[in-house]
Image (cartoon, rainbow, N blue to C red; front, side):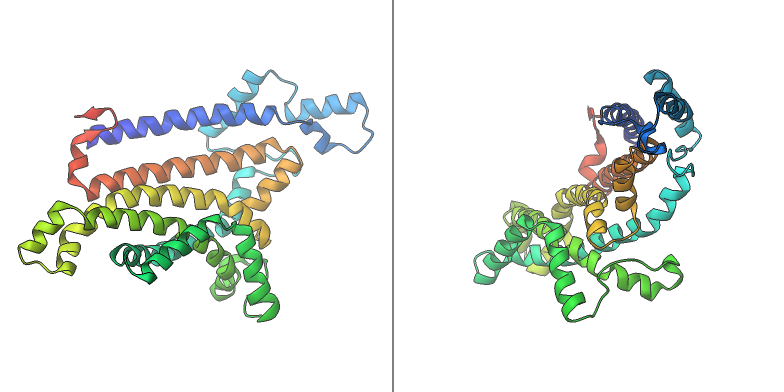
Length: 321
């Protein structure tokens, strides 16, 4: 287990470094000059060159990359080209919205998908089992932004139960107001996410229901509930945990779209604004934090699988220990 943790930690560091290289190079391929964000229309070539020198875009790419990595090592994400404010504190202030939105959506989706997926598998031959499976397939095909607009139309414009968008200026000083503002965005993400999760929970449950060891325990006198609780849930949880890690990472990244629909001041709005202004430090900072979060979630999901299933503790990513 220690060997596995060391290898996974090394893989995490290497993956993060490779991601930094890719992010840095891809941003430099974007059309447009970031120096233009500092200048008005009709700037002279001398002014453009001075702006490039100010933000450091006139230096060789290896030097720019080395400077960025050095700052990352010091936990410094740099300063915005446009506002000249530190990027790190600005991202932290936006995470106050994005992280609760992601976690609440994830928890609600799991709370819905697990029982629905189990019922869809256990009652696969009934009409309502088929209905649940069909609804999950339909939910996968529905875009999140369409669900968000539909909820706004029904619960904000017609019923006037929840606000159509925005977030309290004092953030979480009033938890009730903050949760009310996140209610529709959370439901939007959870509905789309749970539709995907139901399929995996149903598939994992069907595999367990058809397994020989479950039939053996039933033949020895165990009730269906007892056999599933003692022996079935753990086997079904192993593949589902892996999917949950992927879904949580996808939810964190996909919150950008939902934040735009509901005008939430999260990472999504900051990223869109940074791209429009060619603000490299802002874009790099947000993508770096997002990449690190995704890799960390994957690491946690892999570790959880080994804690659930003792058979995986004797193997590492390279094979048998």
